[in-house]
Length: 205
Image 1 (cartoon, one colour):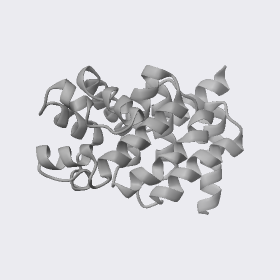
Image 2 (image 1 turned 90 degrees about the horizontal axis):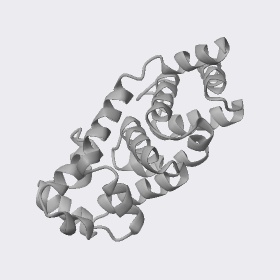
Image 3 (image 1 turned 120 degrees about the horizontal axis):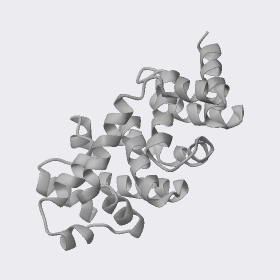
């Protein structure tokens, strides 16, 4: 029964996203395999994918091809799929490059969550808790990085990162872009029905 429901939702998302069924199955299976069915249904995950597409500059095939590289890292740090999706929407909205956005975001998460990095130490010292402790308490990653940025001069914030990828990701999520991240997160929470909306639009065209 679960398999049939999964395939039904995958087929609908496939039509809605202009992707073949194999691509859509891959995208939804990646999410389910990492986060499990107890967190969200296939339909809810599909709607979040379409909210990412709507808010950013990416496609279902691009997300299916690259998104899986960041999900295990995010899950290991107690970062929700909605949080990941909102960040990807904001970063791709600026760069239009899904592969680069995933690489940048994964590196940012890794540096924030790894004990002993400049970034993780700064989070602990400035915010009073580790990155994982903050995400586990319900804080979103965008809010964590923006709050950290506000505790120091911009130049000091910029040198916290050991890789250009992590730095690029962070700078696209803080400052003037912090409000965009908040809006994207709201969009993920209100994503219900977006797959069907896209499906109906394609069928009517």
